[in-house]
Length: 222
Image 1 (cartoon, rainbow, N blue to C red):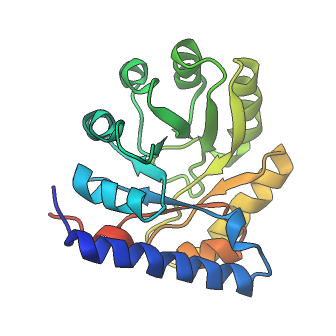
Image 2: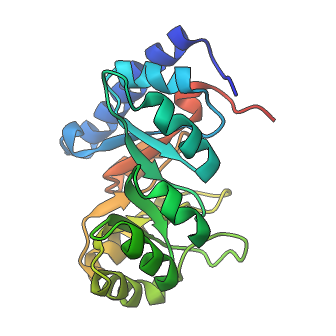
């Protein structure tokens, strides 16, 4: 599970942080208000260690088995990662993940929230929204978001905001704007949106968290 040499990864961290800062300035925002999450799917523990040493502590994983392999390997280092679970999550993986995850970004249904509340009471979560109703994509539909936010809060979870992935084709800006508008309506503030191909646009539309993989680690292996 390797991408670029570790020296290149370290340089990429600085380059992406500069791009984030510039996008924030264009939007009249404080760059410090935006969290860069390194999307580490298929990377090695060594590469994750490089981004930690470069000062980037928020690490996202799409797959439970990868997080569970990397987290213990990196737990004793000089910098402790803040693990974000950003992929589709099965309820039967929650118990094993609970000791490690700081922010559960892909909560899209109440039974999943109940399982998180059972094993990680008071956990911080984001509601994943399926903005365009694509049937193969995870996430609740926009009209159900307020109900889900209330339901998760009722389970004792801290619902910090919303997360979404826009459609692969077309301009992502209207989708990011719609997620920001939805967050305002349901009363949450964190917006996890934007990846390598569109994180600067996402920042201009209000993203507080961006999930970047390829711009840090290089293309994922086939």
